[in-house]
Amino acid sequence: MTPTFRELVLTFARIGFLSFGGAAGQIAMMHRIVVGEKKWLDEPRYLHALNYCMLLPGPEAQQLATYIGWLTHGVRGGLAAGILFILPGSLIMLALSFLYVLGTGTTLVDGVFFGIKAAVLAIVIQALIKIAKRGLKGPLPYGLAVAAFLLILLFDLPFPLIILGAGVAGALAARVAPQLMGQPGGLAVAPVAAPPAGAVAGALRTALACLAAWWAPVLAAVLLLGPDHVLVAIGLFFSKLAVITFGGAYAVLAYLAQAGVDMGWATPRQMIDGLGLAETTPGPTILVNQFVAFLAALKDGGALPALLAATLGALMATWVTFAPSFLWIFAGAPFVEGLRRNAALAAALTGITAAVVGVIAYVAVWFGLNVLFASATRVSEGWLHFVRVDPSSLDPAAALLSALALGLVFGARRGMMETVGLMAVLGVAVTAGAGMW
Image 1 (spheres, one colour):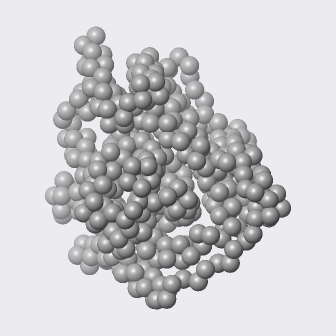
Image 2: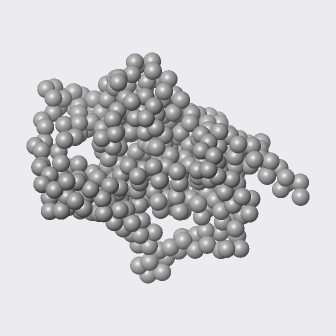
Image 3: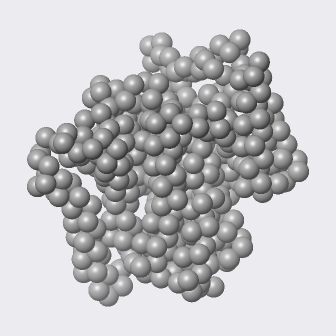
């Protein structure tokens, strides 16, 4: 069923406002709406699009939204879906950045965030279970998921290496023992379909247009403000970050935190606060980029008024973070669609999906520990890396709210926004009560 353009716009505007829970929750929500409710795509095509987006640098959930829009209404559909997916969260993050630096509404905002974190933890766990059920169909995918989880948790192995190894393992298994991948024996390898007539030229034109749009604001900042201005530095830094963010926001947060602090753009405490803002607003977690850029330009805006410079810095970071995603989708999707029935590639992507399940499981554990404990730090001893938790730092209120959120999601089967709204109200009540004692 192909939606009208108006229906596509309204649906992704709704998704944009409801996309809490990071990539895992957003991907699960899009699956429920696009495949389950609207039936715009069937399961295999949705998973094919998801697997391709998992291979790309940048925010995979926003790229998946763009891909779905492109499949249904071409370039204009991709632009509409991709922009609407990130616009609500970006505007909310900008407003919260103003509140953060101006210091108003602290109790209310902290309370809302405190409650939403508990809800997000439940939503991420629910999304992990759903994605695992869809993506793990045989013994090897389960093994790859566990291996990916352990390799990140204990050895801090880079995400690109994990997905490359999982893809190779899946492709090899499909040839020698397809039953390990949950596939019937004797699976034939289909030929790779040639791109449609004109697809190469069209993809090249689109790629060039996206490339020009990506760098236009950076060039404008160089011409208007000079090459040493903070807006130029923001544009260059976050453009580089957009190209190396394989595996989503969590794969690059350590680098962002280190570089942001080293450049004097944010303190370690501000980096943690920015992640908290990004986690509890709709849209990709990588919107933390916008918060860091807001602070950077606020401190060093030159002749520009401080808040104007901060706003322009936030907009610059958002643009160069997400513009490359449109390039990857519009230039690559026509060719990827021609590979949908290639069995070897399908098996490789199945292996990659399994590895991503393990990565999301690690993110769920990391996020859960940081919600429940005040002291949860990642430490290294030789080759081994692990999270050290101080049991005495357990936050009883956070644990209670998290348990309630899990009960609402899994026991009462309440919807996402109902759970988020109730947890936000309870978070404000708990925070206000704590302030009175």
